[in-house]
View (tube, rainbow, N blue to C red):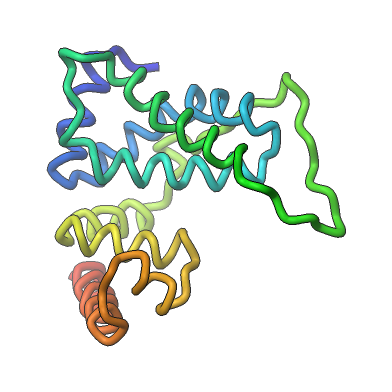
Length: 179
């Protein structure tokens, strides 16, 4: 685990769109956040969804962190905890296959930086070069698995503009990856 000073520095870098700092921040904090989320939800599938949403929110709101109000980890835990509580309060659809309920002992795993492929590192760097609004749109489209219509409604953006912006963002990422 990194020190609060290191995590604060990483949050400041993330606020500037630094994808490598975000990757390091994730590696340093995911076990703690996942543990909090998993204790609340007690289901891996829901916990994974909340973790994606929590880190997306951290990415988007890193510039709003104020070290005079709390420690960086406490700020991130508060985000994850709030999202987990919201998810726990939502009625869950009845599924034919019951999701696996986890034991208290089970914990998260993170991918160490040295195990990430060079391609993934380059991709994160290229995404980090996009404007913050376009990063959010792209991450929501990919990780949120929203249809264009759903994403359009969520972002309050016309579908045609969304489609064009997504296409432009993907082309920029493609050019970045080729250079």
